[in-house]
View (cartoon, rainbow, N blue to C red):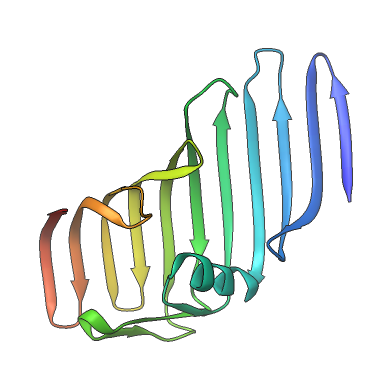
Length: 169
């Protein structure tokens, strides 16, 4: 479903669709100054977690929902996506630190994803809660889609309370 409205040099598109079999609803507004606002709502479903696990190697299962927003101009080199994800119905297993989050436990990820030339450049303003694990920080990515540097702050999880953890490849 798609609806289009044109008014005073402003275009608005609203609709529903799928991306990688993930259902979504979107609103896109463009004005005379070439400013574009995009908002995407992804309802709670297991297709988003399956996609994250298979394409990005995220150790996630269950289901999740998300809201993604951005405001940009087509001439911009870097696009910043604000993401608010509800991860309460998802599960995570991080064997490296002997941690697991079960579906039903508190879970949320709020962040700004910076994309340049179709690649993730950074995750900024990260605020993550996965059951008893929580952290804030910023990550920088290289060509391999793996973090090459980062700073995580206020890391709490059973047995750990770390003020700051910095790493660089």
